[in-house]
Image (tube, rainbow, N blue to C red; front, side, top):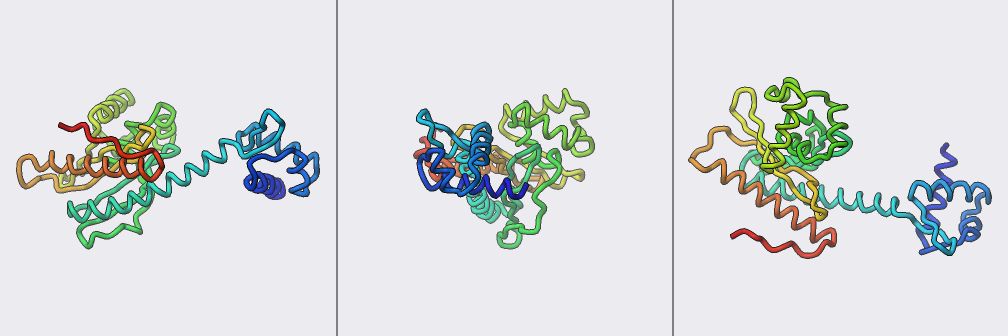
Length: 258
């Protein structure tokens, strides 16, 4: 198995050095057995890692390019998340978490506390129950049907993590309500902390992350809650604009706010 992987890597590395190569060039350039090269090229073509042009020449396929793009997106998203979490935690004085969703799991991109710095929480676990946080609930609300199925398969029903939704119908209704409002909330058992989360959109128009914060449940003045949510939404929009610029999607669209 290791030898097969090594030979496959040899072919891909060679194809990565040129725009297109004929079969003979791949065979001679890798020094591998001719039959092995033919078999591996065929398999890679079926999987989308290699493309065969109309003239019979081979080149790197879209699947490899997509993997590279995914890594770039993750790196830039994590970088922006850390900067935004630190800035927002310092401004709000609470804990700010930015999380993403993948394979049915919510995982942290960045978490920062404003109580002592602000500082990034390097020691925090990257995964937690998806129902137990406002960011997790928001990410699940914006997930497609297959992603929701993955999350349910991994986590089951919320149970004690979200007692207000005891069955699947009410769970989906609650998720739809979050999606419609663009806001997820979660209170702690003693009511002393309330977590809120808003979506961060990527250049493709889909939600790439959730930006959330934990704050005191009792706000000092009327309207503080709305102002807090508005600040999170502004930060999420700032992240979305930065993603558009960094990933080559052009300049941020001008605000349509009155």
